[in-house]
Image (cartoon, rainbow over all chains, first blue to last red; front, side):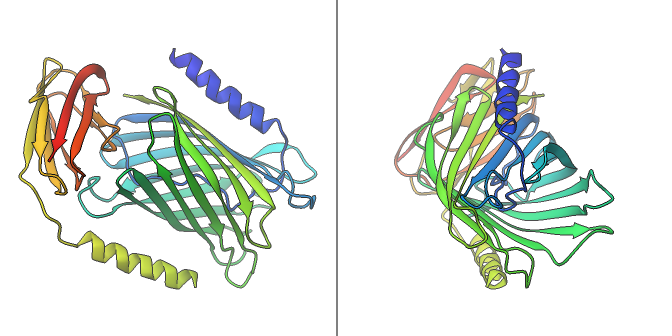
Length: 245
Length: 109
């Protein structure tokens, strides 16, 4: 049963990755929860693509394969590989990353749940691309059946090819917890770009979340670009399989 | 504008994290022979409650509730703390995700 779930998730990821490659839609990312479950091991695929009449903004894709494990209470560690495609190139691995997510206090102990995410992403093409450090504040609050998450963060280029100040990121989603298999909601994906660059990308759109099978979860969203730098539309898919050790 | 927004959120987070809230009495529930004891907990509605879950079995268990959005592993011979509330009056199910036949109910009134 478990092997079938893994093959299902990997197959879906490969199917989406085969659509092609492009410049990454940097604004679009998973909205992380600050809540960590000790002993949980996750295999995750996430990917996104854009749709636009302008060839420079159309079919921009990025894909990520990630492994996560929470060895102790409130601390989760992750390893990831990112795949992107240049507009006239092929899908290729661009970075490998290592990071951690820390939950500040017990869920529900205070009015708001909070944590932090820090990752270091090493460029594969070290002769031309910078490494990056990403840091995000993770917030979560539930009112009745409505669950809200916010990620506020920065992404800073480091190393000999680093350019400019940090990209400033804001992600938000809200969902109505209708049932374990289907939770409708919406999502905001904002990349304010580097200071003084005026290259902002903002998206908003409907999203759905839920469980396909025990341990196999999904997220899917379709966005509308609401800033000049964004594509007209974009889409995101995430599949994760979790088991416990 | 982004910086102002982040500062505002930080102030809001700090203020609300320290805000006082009405608390109920702590409750205890044990897991023994894959059974929650007691199987039904009664708590005051609209009040925060701390539940201490103790696993008396020799295998790990996971206290989980979709209704309450809680999921936490409790090791053999260990105990965990779960904070819930304030919740509306009603019945909220919970279970051991590692042994799904083990279930319980929280009644808020």
